[in-house]
Image 1: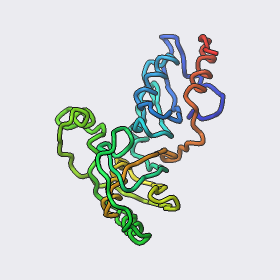
Image 2: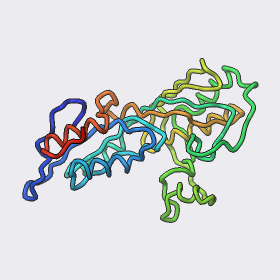
Image 3: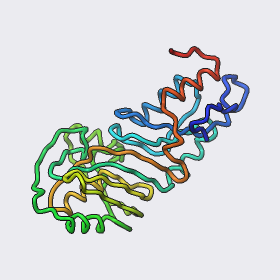
Length: 244
């Protein structure tokens, strides 16, 4: 694993005749970057021959992104299957088609009726083993086409429910109608779907204004590299030109 330590894996070789055993890299994904953007940037800047990420983060989300290179890419499915933890903020009273700020507001809803009891009831209904419909703005494939591509073209599509487990769902309504939350969940959970459904259960609407992935299994965000810092360290190790 590569975290904040300045040690560089000896497995990264430019020589063609040396097997690429690979490594596991923890990156704190920057805001507005896609997970693919990060993988592509690392591949080009650090001369990786093969790289993949273990679990997509939306462009407007930040936090822990696990990337695997070389032979370590065989572990990607194992990392994707692990428990995940998120923190973020949802806002009641408005909705957007994407359920976050990637798209414009499309409706407003009342919030005056929402009491602490209403919030607690919604929280409880979204805790444990639940079924949820993934957002249309997601990477799920529908007849071979990514759902978000259909959404951006204004096309409708039916997405089936999926079973997930919400092991912990904490909320803090101190700054109502903004609700801070912490979620620990199983593989396949869509946090934007949680936000959408929370709004509906509260008799209103909701969108997500902030999201950060803080943990995947035993890997924690505090051990992750800032992207440019990792690239600098790796290029130094490879004796490549470093931008100042």
